[in-house]
Image (cartoon, rainbow, N blue to C red):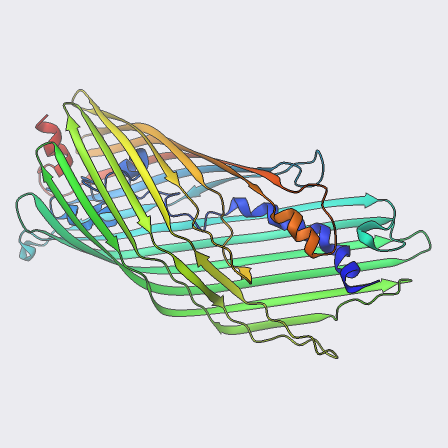
Length: 472
């Protein structure tokens, strides 16, 4: 059996891993919003956020807010489903669903008299956060399975564990330089933790008593701390508001990573030319992560009881670099040398959002919005550290109403998308197998339920949003 044939013994299950990549949202920028109205408006209010979520969307607008407040984007319940048509063979789709409860944003104003007209605010937000496990098992019978002569029975087991969490903590400062113009800055510390593990096992046998056991496993873990800035300007006068926000590239402060790789092929009654066994683990490696520069513009216009919001954000490219740089691996007794680096590259993307806010009487507002959520995932020569490669579209709606001096939000967001991919067939070809399908159809759906609250602090001053509403 050639090296290609030995790899084919577990190549079938390796191909299935490709289909799981639709679950990850690690290469998207607008999957989540930060703030209660932000969820309902799809982040479309860069011109005039009108609440404490300005710390993220436009810190310049923070300088035009009237009253200090505390915002809790309370319970965010998220249901996700992905389906890969024919992901396990003709007529056998691969599907996975999950339900998560996600924290999103805690932000509040710091009201100090010595600041004068300036404003300080703090924020803690979950920029990214997901975790899932995908496992699939199967068995086949036939002749020379996987191209291995004499193999007539083969069982496979594959498990993929993926998790990414990223938290931002910031302290924002803003000031009104003129009556209608606010400027501000939000420095953020961003802490990222990412884990990726998969294990595969293939067991086979032949009619003459041949036996085969193949295992392959890879894992990576990184922790990284970086800092970045959001700079914002907001001009609000009469029914109009316009805004500009610039996000700087991140600056790395610290990072550590580990990576492991193992492969083994044991046979009985088969003549093999299998690759050498490898058991390698490297710890204390430097970890690297970069987030790109971005710029967003927004405008809003009030028409009586209705306000229209629109915004667009462009994010620049990040050229390919090594997230985890491992030392070369040389299996014992061979001259083979390879490494198990993980790489990252991001392509430029442009996302847009449009939202409508309508006031019903004095105590209720309703919202409807839509925004794009295009993937920035770019191809790399080595193993890509990111997985989310699917363009998504979002629709959101809900209500915002006061109870006493507090305001509550109830709403929902749905996201969907899909893509034709040839990565599964290509993965099989690289292991020495041929796929009966040249491409596969991947479909993604996500539904989010939001329950949140804003709590007014201090006196009876109105926020900029309420003041504008009173002028209608």
